[in-house]
Length: 291
Image (cartoon, rainbow, N blue to C red):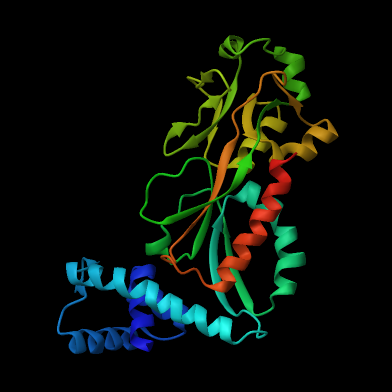
Protein backbone atom coordinates (compact mmCIF):
# COMPACT_ATOMS: atom_id res chain seq x y z
CA UNK A 1 0.00 0.00 0.00
CA UNK A 2 2.82 2.40 0.80
CA UNK A 3 4.44 1.83 -2.61
CA UNK A 4 1.09 2.21 -4.36
CA UNK A 5 0.36 5.46 -2.51
CA UNK A 6 3.78 6.79 -3.50
CA UNK A 7 3.27 5.70 -7.12
CA UNK A 8 -0.08 7.53 -7.31
CA UNK A 9 1.34 10.69 -5.77
CA UNK A 10 4.31 10.68 -8.18
CA UNK A 11 1.89 10.54 -11.12
CA UNK A 12 -0.27 13.33 -9.69
CA UNK A 13 2.67 15.54 -8.71
CA UNK A 14 4.55 14.99 -11.98
CA UNK A 15 7.95 14.24 -10.45
CA UNK A 16 9.74 12.33 -7.69
CA UNK A 17 10.81 15.62 -6.12
CA UNK A 18 7.28 17.06 -5.90
CA UNK A 19 5.91 13.77 -4.56
CA UNK A 20 8.67 13.55 -1.95
CA UNK A 21 7.79 17.04 -0.76
CA UNK A 22 4.19 16.04 -0.05
CA UNK A 23 5.32 12.96 1.90
CA UNK A 24 8.06 14.79 3.80
CA UNK A 25 10.53 12.36 2.25
CA UNK A 26 13.41 12.55 -0.25
CA UNK A 27 13.43 12.02 -4.04
CA UNK A 28 15.88 9.15 -3.52
CA UNK A 29 13.52 7.33 -1.14
CA UNK A 30 10.60 7.83 -3.54
CA UNK A 31 12.71 6.55 -6.46
CA UNK A 32 13.69 3.43 -4.52
CA UNK A 33 10.06 2.75 -3.63
CA UNK A 34 9.04 2.99 -7.30
CA UNK A 35 11.96 0.73 -8.28
CA UNK A 36 10.79 -1.91 -5.79
CA UNK A 37 7.26 -1.71 -7.17
CA UNK A 38 8.54 -2.06 -10.76
CA UNK A 39 10.66 -5.06 -9.74
CA UNK A 40 7.66 -6.76 -8.15
CA UNK A 41 5.48 -6.12 -11.20
CA UNK A 42 8.21 -6.92 -13.71
CA UNK A 43 7.47 -3.81 -15.82
CA UNK A 44 8.70 -0.24 -16.18
CA UNK A 45 6.13 2.24 -14.90
CA UNK A 46 8.05 5.39 -15.84
CA UNK A 47 10.37 6.48 -18.61
CA UNK A 48 13.10 8.43 -16.84
CA UNK A 49 15.96 10.44 -18.27
CA UNK A 50 17.66 13.78 -17.68
CA UNK A 51 15.22 15.39 -20.15
CA UNK A 52 11.97 13.47 -19.77
CA UNK A 53 9.74 11.98 -17.12
CA UNK A 54 6.57 10.21 -18.23
CA UNK A 55 4.42 7.17 -17.61
CA UNK A 56 4.92 4.17 -19.86
CA UNK A 57 1.84 2.58 -21.44
CA UNK A 58 1.95 -0.05 -18.69
CA UNK A 59 2.26 2.70 -16.09
CA UNK A 60 -0.79 4.53 -17.45
CA UNK A 61 -2.87 1.35 -17.44
CA UNK A 62 -1.73 0.49 -13.91
CA UNK A 63 -2.51 3.99 -12.60
CA UNK A 64 -6.01 3.94 -14.11
CA UNK A 65 -6.74 0.67 -12.31
CA UNK A 66 -5.11 1.17 -8.92
CA UNK A 67 -5.72 4.88 -8.23
CA UNK A 68 -9.49 4.51 -7.57
CA UNK A 69 -8.84 1.40 -5.44
CA UNK A 70 -6.21 3.06 -3.25
CA UNK A 71 -8.33 6.19 -2.87
CA UNK A 72 -11.27 3.99 -1.89
CA UNK A 73 -9.23 2.22 0.79
CA UNK A 74 -8.03 5.55 2.17
CA UNK A 75 -11.60 6.83 2.25
CA UNK A 76 -12.78 3.64 3.98
CA UNK A 77 -10.14 4.17 6.69
CA UNK A 78 -11.44 7.69 7.26
CA UNK A 79 -15.06 6.51 7.42
CA UNK A 80 -14.25 3.72 9.87
CA UNK A 81 -12.43 6.09 12.17
CA UNK A 82 -15.79 7.78 12.62
CA UNK A 83 -15.43 10.73 14.95
CA UNK A 84 -11.73 11.23 14.30
CA UNK A 85 -11.05 14.57 12.59
CA UNK A 86 -10.15 14.88 8.92
CA UNK A 87 -6.45 15.45 8.53
CA UNK A 88 -3.92 16.16 5.83
CA UNK A 89 -2.75 18.84 3.40
CA UNK A 90 -4.64 20.42 0.50
CA UNK A 91 -2.90 22.61 -2.06
CA UNK A 92 -5.35 24.75 -4.01
CA UNK A 93 -5.10 27.52 -6.62
CA UNK A 94 -7.68 30.33 -6.67
CA UNK A 95 -8.10 33.43 -8.85
CA UNK A 96 -6.74 36.33 -6.82
CA UNK A 97 -9.67 38.76 -6.89
CA UNK A 98 -12.53 36.34 -6.33
CA UNK A 99 -10.47 34.04 -4.12
CA UNK A 100 -9.83 36.92 -1.73
CA UNK A 101 -13.59 37.17 -1.20
CA UNK A 102 -13.62 33.57 0.03
CA UNK A 103 -10.66 33.89 2.41
CA UNK A 104 -12.59 35.32 5.35
CA UNK A 105 -15.03 32.43 5.29
CA UNK A 106 -12.29 29.83 4.82
CA UNK A 107 -10.13 31.17 7.64
CA UNK A 108 -12.94 32.15 10.05
CA UNK A 109 -15.20 29.11 9.69
CA UNK A 110 -13.76 26.23 7.65
CA UNK A 111 -10.28 25.89 9.16
CA UNK A 112 -11.39 26.30 12.82
CA UNK A 113 -13.97 23.55 12.18
CA UNK A 114 -11.29 21.27 10.65
CA UNK A 115 -8.04 21.94 12.54
CA UNK A 116 -6.42 18.79 11.12
CA UNK A 117 -6.57 20.13 7.56
CA UNK A 118 -3.59 22.17 6.37
CA UNK A 119 -4.37 24.49 3.45
CA UNK A 120 -1.82 25.94 1.06
CA UNK A 121 -3.60 28.48 -1.17
CA UNK A 122 -1.99 30.06 -4.22
CA UNK A 123 -3.80 33.28 -5.14
CA UNK A 124 -3.32 34.17 -8.81
CA UNK A 125 -5.22 34.09 -12.10
CA UNK A 126 -2.67 31.87 -13.85
CA UNK A 127 -4.06 28.55 -15.10
CA UNK A 128 -1.79 26.24 -13.12
CA UNK A 129 -0.97 22.70 -14.25
CA UNK A 130 -2.32 20.68 -11.33
CA UNK A 131 -0.39 17.50 -12.04
CA UNK A 132 3.01 18.97 -12.86
CA UNK A 133 2.90 21.70 -10.22
CA UNK A 134 1.61 19.51 -7.41
CA UNK A 135 -1.76 21.14 -6.80
CA UNK A 136 -4.67 19.10 -5.46
CA UNK A 137 -7.41 21.45 -6.69
CA UNK A 138 -7.93 24.65 -8.66
CA UNK A 139 -10.88 27.04 -8.60
CA UNK A 140 -11.60 28.25 -12.14
CA UNK A 141 -13.98 30.98 -13.30
CA UNK A 142 -15.26 30.61 -16.87
CA UNK A 143 -15.34 27.71 -19.29
CA UNK A 144 -12.71 25.05 -18.70
CA UNK A 145 -11.01 23.24 -21.56
CA UNK A 146 -10.85 19.45 -21.45
CA UNK A 147 -7.73 18.72 -19.40
CA UNK A 148 -8.40 15.11 -18.47
CA UNK A 149 -9.05 16.25 -14.88
CA UNK A 150 -12.36 16.10 -13.05
CA UNK A 151 -14.31 19.39 -13.07
CA UNK A 152 -17.02 19.87 -10.45
CA UNK A 153 -19.47 22.75 -11.13
CA UNK A 154 -19.92 24.99 -8.08
CA UNK A 155 -22.36 27.55 -9.47
CA UNK A 156 -22.74 30.59 -11.74
CA UNK A 157 -21.45 34.10 -11.13
CA UNK A 158 -22.97 37.33 -12.44
CA UNK A 159 -20.94 39.71 -14.62
CA UNK A 160 -21.26 43.49 -14.88
CA UNK A 161 -19.88 46.35 -16.96
CA UNK A 162 -18.47 49.12 -14.77
CA UNK A 163 -16.65 52.42 -15.05
CA UNK A 164 -15.59 55.11 -12.59
CA UNK A 165 -17.60 58.32 -12.12
CA UNK A 166 -14.56 60.22 -13.47
CA UNK A 167 -14.57 58.22 -16.70
CA UNK A 168 -18.33 58.64 -17.14
CA UNK A 169 -18.06 62.40 -16.57
CA UNK A 170 -15.30 62.58 -19.17
CA UNK A 171 -16.65 60.23 -21.84
CA UNK A 172 -20.36 59.77 -21.08
CA UNK A 173 -22.17 56.42 -20.98
CA UNK A 174 -22.99 54.14 -23.93
CA UNK A 175 -26.73 53.82 -24.57
CA UNK A 176 -26.49 50.59 -26.61
CA UNK A 177 -24.19 47.62 -27.09
CA UNK A 178 -23.09 49.08 -30.43
CA UNK A 179 -22.07 52.30 -28.68
CA UNK A 180 -19.41 50.39 -26.73
CA UNK A 181 -17.29 50.68 -29.87
CA UNK A 182 -16.75 54.39 -29.12
CA UNK A 183 -15.41 53.82 -25.60
CA UNK A 184 -12.13 52.88 -23.93
CA UNK A 185 -11.94 49.32 -22.61
CA UNK A 186 -9.98 47.59 -19.91
CA UNK A 187 -9.71 44.06 -21.25
CA UNK A 188 -9.32 40.83 -19.31
CA UNK A 189 -6.92 38.63 -21.26
CA UNK A 190 -7.28 34.85 -21.21
CA UNK A 191 -4.62 32.79 -23.00
CA UNK A 192 -3.55 35.93 -24.84
CA UNK A 193 -7.05 36.81 -26.08
CA UNK A 194 -9.57 39.34 -24.78
CA UNK A 195 -12.44 37.80 -22.84
CA UNK A 196 -15.67 38.50 -24.76
CA UNK A 197 -18.45 40.60 -23.28
CA UNK A 198 -21.33 38.15 -23.59
CA UNK A 199 -24.85 39.56 -23.44
CA UNK A 200 -27.89 37.28 -23.43
CA UNK A 201 -28.57 38.02 -27.10
CA UNK A 202 -25.28 39.51 -28.36
CA UNK A 203 -21.53 39.41 -27.99
CA UNK A 204 -19.00 42.21 -28.11
CA UNK A 205 -15.22 41.79 -28.13
CA UNK A 206 -13.30 45.06 -27.67
CA UNK A 207 -10.87 45.33 -30.59
CA UNK A 208 -8.39 47.41 -28.62
CA UNK A 209 -7.85 48.07 -24.97
CA UNK A 210 -6.30 51.02 -23.18
CA UNK A 211 -5.19 48.53 -20.54
CA UNK A 212 -4.97 44.73 -20.86
CA UNK A 213 -4.42 42.36 -17.95
CA UNK A 214 -4.80 38.72 -16.92
CA UNK A 215 -5.62 39.72 -13.34
CA UNK A 216 -9.12 40.40 -12.05
CA UNK A 217 -7.69 42.58 -9.29
CA UNK A 218 -5.77 44.71 -11.80
CA UNK A 219 -8.94 44.99 -13.87
CA UNK A 220 -10.86 46.38 -10.91
CA UNK A 221 -8.12 48.84 -9.91
CA UNK A 222 -7.76 50.16 -13.47
CA UNK A 223 -11.52 50.70 -13.74
CA UNK A 224 -11.63 52.45 -10.38
CA UNK A 225 -8.86 54.78 -11.53
CA UNK A 226 -10.85 55.89 -14.57
CA UNK A 227 -9.03 54.16 -17.44
CA UNK A 228 -12.18 52.82 -19.10
CA UNK A 229 -15.02 50.29 -19.02
CA UNK A 230 -14.35 46.90 -17.46
CA UNK A 231 -16.24 43.61 -17.81
CA UNK A 232 -15.85 41.99 -14.41
CA UNK A 233 -17.40 39.69 -11.80
CA UNK A 234 -20.14 41.51 -9.92
CA UNK A 235 -19.00 39.96 -6.65
CA UNK A 236 -15.57 41.55 -7.08
CA UNK A 237 -16.91 45.11 -7.34
CA UNK A 238 -19.93 45.10 -5.02
CA UNK A 239 -18.16 47.23 -2.41
CA UNK A 240 -16.91 49.67 -5.04
CA UNK A 241 -20.42 49.99 -6.47
CA UNK A 242 -21.94 50.53 -3.03
CA UNK A 243 -19.34 53.17 -2.18
CA UNK A 244 -19.77 55.00 -5.49
CA UNK A 245 -16.22 54.33 -6.65
CA UNK A 246 -17.66 52.51 -9.68
CA UNK A 247 -20.95 52.73 -11.57
CA UNK A 248 -22.70 50.14 -13.71
CA UNK A 249 -22.73 50.59 -17.48
CA UNK A 250 -25.76 49.38 -19.51
CA UNK A 251 -27.39 47.93 -16.35
CA UNK A 252 -30.65 47.35 -18.21
CA UNK A 253 -29.02 44.84 -20.59
CA UNK A 254 -28.36 41.46 -18.97
CA UNK A 255 -24.95 39.84 -19.26
CA UNK A 256 -24.42 36.08 -19.41
CA UNK A 257 -23.27 34.62 -16.10
CA UNK A 258 -20.06 32.58 -16.03
CA UNK A 259 -19.61 29.15 -14.45
CA UNK A 260 -17.24 28.53 -11.57
CA UNK A 261 -15.76 25.07 -11.27
CA UNK A 262 -13.33 23.13 -9.12
CA UNK A 263 -10.76 21.03 -10.94
CA UNK A 264 -9.11 18.23 -9.03
CA UNK A 265 -6.65 15.40 -9.60
CA UNK A 266 -8.06 12.82 -7.20
CA UNK A 267 -9.37 10.44 -9.87
CA UNK A 268 -12.80 9.21 -8.80
CA UNK A 269 -12.18 8.96 -5.05
CA UNK A 270 -11.85 12.43 -3.55
CA UNK A 271 -10.49 12.42 0.04
CA UNK A 272 -12.90 13.46 2.79
CA UNK A 273 -10.93 16.64 3.51
CA UNK A 274 -11.22 17.69 -0.16
CA UNK A 275 -14.95 16.87 -0.19
CA UNK A 276 -15.44 19.00 2.92
CA UNK A 277 -13.67 21.99 1.37
CA UNK A 278 -15.54 21.57 -1.92
CA UNK A 279 -18.90 21.52 -0.13
CA UNK A 280 -17.95 24.58 1.91
CA UNK A 281 -16.83 26.57 -1.14
CA UNK A 282 -19.99 25.62 -3.04
CA UNK A 283 -22.10 27.00 -0.18
CA UNK A 284 -20.13 30.26 -0.09
CA UNK A 285 -20.23 30.68 -3.87
CA UNK A 286 -24.00 30.14 -3.88
CA UNK A 287 -24.38 33.28 -1.77
CA UNK A 288 -22.57 35.33 -4.43
CA UNK A 289 -24.46 33.74 -7.30
CA UNK A 290 -27.80 34.67 -5.77
CA UNK A 291 -26.98 38.38 -5.41
